Image (cartoon, rainbow, N blue to C red; front, side, top):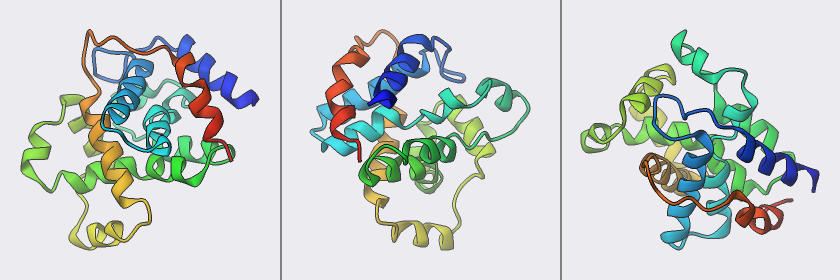
Length: 178
């Protein structure tokens, strides 16, 4: 249960802007969860959306990594930490949400709607998946949820959106624990 309070505290106390965007990381993740809720997604996917960039909270100075042209592998760091506490239905889409972007950019229309910050991070994260990598990704157990998470992630960068309080997600977080 202690992990829930730690997560909530990180959301409340982290006021840094989401790399290259005009909203905070906390606002971005909550917006992602709100979009998943609006789409009537299952609770595990809503929780995955809420926590998908949690690895940035763990990284020291994630913005500095971008400046130095380095990928902090936030998805892997977040996954490694969160898998100790949360169900695989929550953490597997988190683990693959960057790969989902790399998969989706094969579609030029998708690529054109990415923010400048997302295009920059795409380069750092390895760029577009090859055909072989794409086929392998399509066979992953949580492929569809990773794609859905990625689309909510991309849409959750809006300024001026009334954001739910992180406390409102406390029960969802508890219900998503192993």
